[in-house]
Length: 237
Image (cartoon, rainbow, N blue to C red; front, side):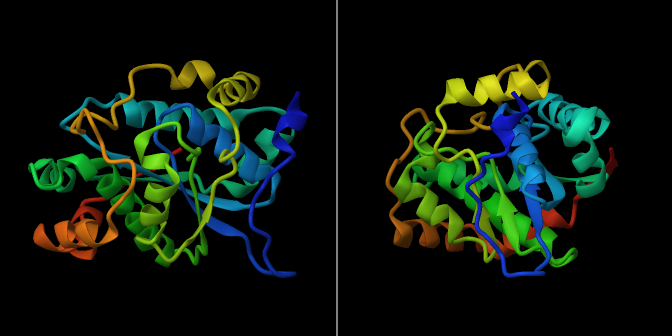
């Protein structure tokens, strides 16, 4: 069953080039599986978690830590790769204050796009410290509104890191089976909290001009992210 993690669709690098990425790890089912698949492909991984406390409770961060520790403590090739390639410090960035700005009527339907754009820009900020060139996510195609082709295009423009999406072509049932094999399924169970402030009818095709104007209206994406980054903390895994 471990062979499931061997078949990756990731962007190749030049011969001898370091493979260093920031991984956005949410506490959900998808991101630990994406991390495991990237490990198999030889990536050095710096994990980042964007926390929505106090709007939500601490569960998402706790699940993120539990899943990463499970990988680090696992037996066999996955555990060996995790101990060699996952940086043993999780960066936690509080984002609730910044996300609340996009609950205004003129921005709310695009809330999830703004949220993911913030996460991608924060990953870029984190990546500057470690020489990361790529951004690893558990994003899939079309499973939620922020993962339509149009919205993914808007989201990835927020960061200069090259996106790695090793789960892009898998359906949810396949990802669940992979999480069970990996041993992270039970650790990731629980309500999703990323939609705590989100709209009931989100936009599925981003209007890039409007997205950027809305971000300027609340102070600019870069300044919002630097404000959040100033409050980041580190958790030893």
